[in-house]
Length: 359
Image 1 (cartoon, rainbow, N blue to C red):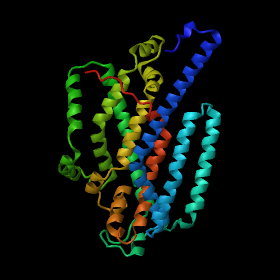
Image 2 (image 1 turned 90 degrees about the horizontal axis):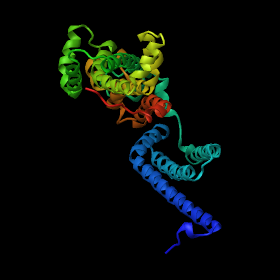
Image 3 (image 1 turned 180 degrees about the vertical axis):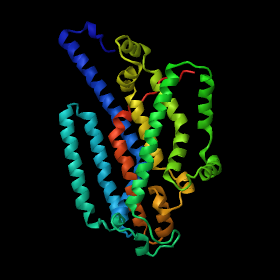
Image 4 (image 1 turned 90 degrees about the vertical axis):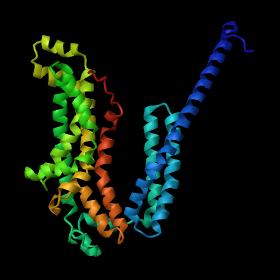
């Protein structure tokens, strides 16, 4: 049996504790490396389809696609493994940043050298060629001529941004009121929100279609925006209420005691405390509007009102058999705003915690 460290001499005690610390560090590094390996392997079924989509969009429908895909994976997987090892073994933040930058540059250069001869931008001609379906002689499911992809992009952007602003504004005010005030019927209102959120949206297509027709908002972006806002608000209100519940009432009372009005206390004291919730609700609302297809497909008819999801659908129907590389390029273009938004907001989304929902 090992001697107790208290019975050892001072140098022996120091050696004992150093050996114990080294053993703990080794075990922690092994555990972290295993965790990174599991995460990398688990992400492959998600990453590979998107990588395949991008590969097809820049290489075409020839055998070059398979070559580019496997060569890219052969570079990326060791790069991810090396990155994981760096994150585990390097403790100095500045040195880690320099090594990660160097690894990224080397990886990009390797991909460019090994796959560069197979890459081209011909599939991205839809960005400047309006009548792309006519060039491909697609089935005239929508009359052959397509609107500019930039028109569809602008419609999707308007739809996503406007409904996001409406959802965030209404959900913030309603969540604050439900969190801070007690009124008759409050519990029933909360239960009603849960019931509204429980309805499958598909069951509401016909009633919503008829309602939009009766009020004259059929085949308008305004009608689609109002529908998505109505469907998103119940959950968004509950999320914002949870964030407001987590803000201590004493903070707001202190501001009121110091002479602030209720409005000033709300905007200057309470809202900064729920910034993460506002960003999270805004991001999810934007993505909901950006990727909307069911109600866009049901309520919009004119090509001038097409969104990106509808544009991609008709392009798939028309030219998939002729040139699926073109459809892949449009798919990558469609995904880009979501990737950029997630990348910009991931710091806040990973910090999101929702407080308990008080009845």
